[in-house]
Image (cartoon, rainbow, N blue to C red; front, side, top):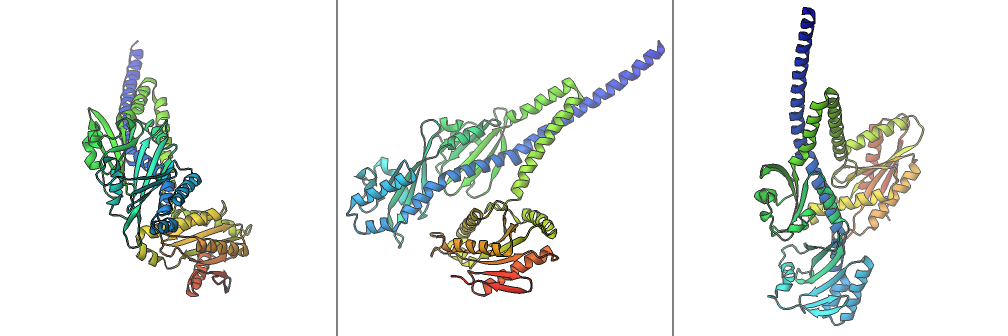
Length: 494
């Protein structure tokens, strides 16, 4: 009997120790999980969602802005206005053609001199300044930036959203001639907001320069309200409206609820994008997991930890993908390219397939930056990256190596074929019209081409291609130079 008592006493102490250790571990795991989840929301999930939504907005407005910009600089329109707008039917037909070609909801032109309001349906007149209905015209007239677009968005039927681009027209001397407008449907923009708002209690707000909410998902019900009047988020609105490219992330409490908010300024639209997330809803799965762990023991704890580990790994994979991408051009960055390049060199050393590379950079790129600013230089880099990516194979690898220099790795590609690819790339960029980013519309590149030779190092392989590039630039630019072992061959620009 005494033996059984001693036995159960030991089992009791072991049970108490295990229980105490289990409860302590569960409590610690819960606290750690809560802190990790909150940090993950503030540092990863919420900024990532903001970037994705901003990318969707930029993609949606790119097409109508480009159409309006093209109309504003169209020589036909300028010449017609210079002739005194004598043939109204001509501009009406022109606007109708633009509307049909680009499937726009509407297009229009307003003349500053005559106050003529031209649409595909005909001509009317704008009242003199003071008419409340025409304030959009005078706001556009008073813009300091000559090519800045003013955007108004209105909720349509269902999830359809209509965007109207008002674009200034100025003479070569900088005088205000009028404006052109393009109205297009942005299918799916509201759906994008709604889909993100279903994740973890989020709310999305687009706020204009007057601090009014112009668009959102569930926040659409408060459209036209000032952001300062929105419960909760209005209390921290001043801290969430940066006037630069900074991403602002902060947390706050409202009526006992812990909330996070992230904001980005979109300078093209003079808007702020704000994404708000309720931390209480984010924490609910952690609390449920904690209670479940207490109920069924250590096995569930291991499963919860495994799930948490899988979640962290998924975020890490996303971050690794972002870390391997050049944010300006969308191409591989140098670090990611190094990994691909080393693998390609291992395959090339086996001698199974020929491997070539093209090294090219932009001629006189400094002049682009000096004449149009760094924004113009960035646009030229993005355009060249887009042209190059479009004409290469899926198996080809292109990276922005440094500044205005790019490297293209061509697997299973002999030197002669690489030369053909390089020439096509040179011609495509030379023929592309870069106006109005570049004043004369022309940008050229110089290229060096080399094929990996058995026995040479990867460093020497790239060095030969780079030396060929230097030779091409020394010989006059806008040409390519072929690097063969022990010799250099060049082509002249046409």
